[in-house]
Image (cartoon, rainbow, N blue to C red; front, side):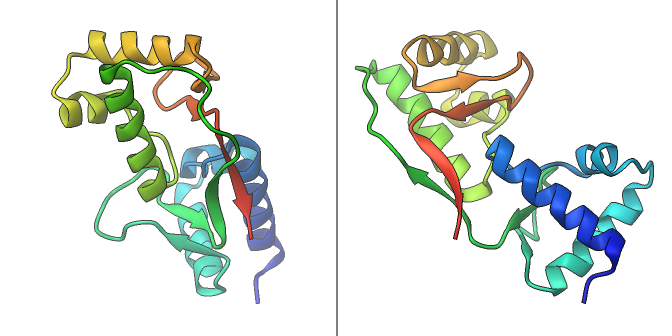
Length: 155
């Protein structure tokens, strides 16, 4: 049984995940709840996990967005409408693979390492994917884009 405060954390976590299509970080949850205690958020998420409402994505990896809602998944809602070059297709595949595994889009540094590309090349291809409507950029910072033809759902 969750306490009232833990229910508040779960509610904020759930709402954020569904609105943004990826889970919040501890810091983002702290800001939403109005606490400066990251350890409180961590304890609350452990309690919520024990209740079976969230699960840790990868216990052996230190991810900033380490938890996901149980039943949260990405569903392809429409096919890609654009023709992609080989580079764009490779980038898109790397993004989809990472997103399906970790419920968040990858950082640019990860894409650079995975594809063995420069930061400039990754950013250029991301801009091309955005111009073709394959991704939607929400803010000009890392991991601030979503896959246009996928949507987050909660079963």
